[in-house]
Image 1 (cartoon, helix red, strand yellow):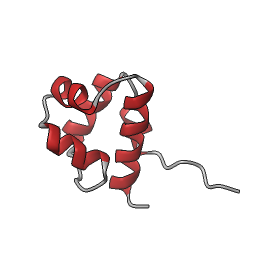
Image 2 (image 1 turned 30 degrees about the vertical axis):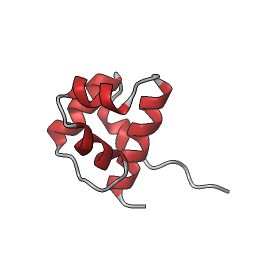
Image 3 (image 1 turned 45 degrees about the horizontal axis):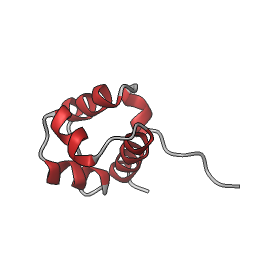
Image 4 (image 1 turned 45 degrees about the vertical axis):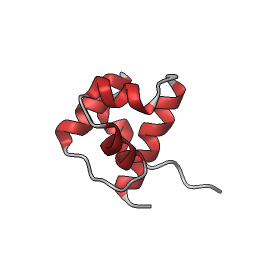
Length: 73
């Protein structure tokens, strides 16, 4: 899995856990809805500034969004 895909999957997982819509996350992070969707799908590589803004809205350490899930055994 590419880093952009890992990041996007983690953003989606945390967003849903927080009960946020994609639109509300995009709005609070100051991003376009479509761009936020492409980030979540792993189609866009966000800048570090954007990753930091997303993490701030999600109230999570930015590095957490870049961590791959542990391998399945």
